[in-house]
Image (cartoon, rainbow, N blue to C red; front, side, top):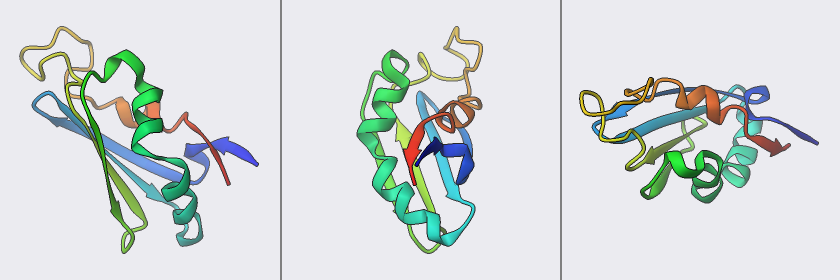
Length: 103
């Protein structure tokens, strides 16, 4: 069954210069394999389209039931340089939770 990612996980995001850092954490341990299978770096990059100009790197944290993503060149220069409304990338996590995943 396909569901929004928000059904099985929560998230938090922020900035490190021009890089967005997104953490996705499964609500239940049994949903972590679906995160690993469905939420790939390629899918995350495609989900954000032109907002992310650089590479997307995924780190797996199985002991936490979490994934961490770094989206390089995603903030229009970062904090004080960016003309974007969300120059610190705080809304990226909410946007990623809209991604549909197969459970």
